[in-house]
Amino acid sequence: MTEYTTVIGLEVHAELKTKTKAFCSCSTEFGGAPNTHVCPVCLGMPGALPVINKQMVEFALRFALAVNCEIQRYSKFDRKNYYYPDLAKAYQISQFYQPIALNGHLDVNVDGETKRIGITRIHMEEDAGKLVHSGASISTSDFSAVDYNRAGVPLIEIVSEPDMRSAAEARAYMEKLRAYLQYTGVCDGKMQEGSMRCDANISIMPVGSKEFGTRAEIKNLNSFKALERAIEYEVERQKEILEDGGHVVQETRTWDDAQGMTFSMRSKEEAHDYRYFPEPDLAPIIIEKEWVEKAKSELPELPDARKARLMNEKGLDDYSAELIVADKKMAEYFDAAAAETDDAKGVANWILGDVSAYLNSNSCGIGDFPVSPAHLGQMVALIKKGVLSSKLAKKVFAEMLKKDEAPADLVKKLGLEQVSDEGAIQAMVDEAIAANPQSVADYKAGKDKAIGFLVGQVMKKSRGKANPGMVNKLIIKTIKGE
Ligand code: ADP
Ligand code: MG
Ligand code: ZN
Image (cartoon, rainbow, N blue to C red; front, side):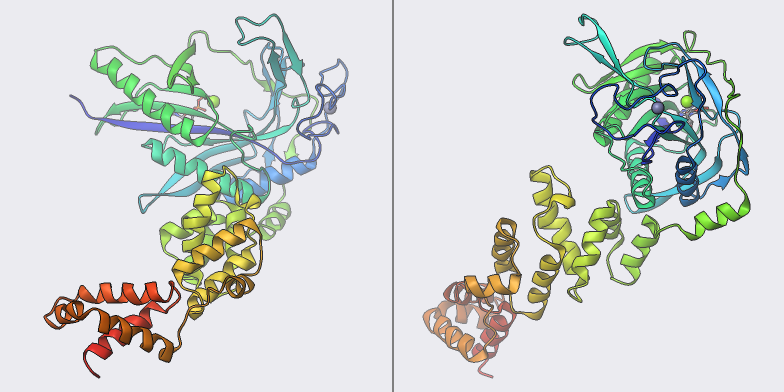
């Protein structure tokens, strides 16, 4: 059987967080009653004239700089013509011939390896409205209604080079993009809610081939998981075709999440001819050097820089740092918690361990986490100081989940202070040694494991509160008669 290489290029749409729409002053706020955020411009009334929202250009510029693009001094808008009721004007204002930015890149990390993914171009465009079908599906619905609240909301489309070679790389790239969108504050990057959407172009070619295979473009990918599953499914589908001696047709396919399959939507022959032409109602955008320099100087700390800082200054490993910076709010939580202790690694372990487990099982984000970062950091500090054992810290943590109290108070209230008083521990050690002569004999005979049993006895006696390091030390010292 032939071995194949997978080739993936992604086209990502990100909704920009401007207050008003791209070419009119309607609100972009999500969730209003249908057709309440509309005006003659975004409804495409004859004679209504669009005006460029400067904030949209500002956001596109900022993001393009963050992902290392070359900003085009001159760019302009074009009309993309198509007839579908989600688009009142029967054309979408987009940038086709001269987009705002070209030639960027992002570095992604998969299995400890860093790989650079090229960004071909970034352009600005307006979103379409939403069709609402009554009934279970389009085919059984009695009627369809259109909500134009979303029509005219500004988007950037980020087109990648066909540089990804696996579903894992595509996911890593999407997660990196989301982080950059969040950090620059231009988009909240929520795939489930559609503020970040992605079409995946997928093809395969025999290993070693220099020529890419024919691609299929997959739409309707509403989560990272869907993206990965769709790529895996599509690669298998194309392999089967090639193995059977057929060839892949260039077409647009849609992902059905429930069935776990892609279905053909339209082939290249039926593909739209968008008849792009320059938008005559909008002046070109000129971005002078000073504007670029100003935007550059105003860029916040970006995910890769933040990751480097967590590694260099806080001593985190590559993997932990990558996970923490992937979510801006998580990174902020980490910084606030780590400010309470010199044990930043301990903070990272708690965040990636018990905190993440809580977030997963409650399907919520760090923004909804009940324990304040200061309290988590203080708890790690207590562990580091030896006041609280790691084991009893779990109890404190569980209490804080119920009520966000200061860990120092909880330790006192629950009587969980670790006993590090040598005299008290020595007394318990003596008792354990006297009660377990066989273990002592085993240890003396070279069975180091016997110590573990004795430590366990003392821990039990202290109800988990004895400092385990000290217990261990004192047992050995006592047996050796030092
Ligand atoms: P179109 O305008 O038809 O969407 P583009 O040239 O803009 O085509 O490419 C769209 C996306 O498809 C880009 O992200 C690009 O990297 C990707 N792409 C192009 N060729 C291939 C291929 N053979 N296999 C996988 N992806 C591809
Ligand atoms: Mg395209
Ligand atoms: Zn409007």
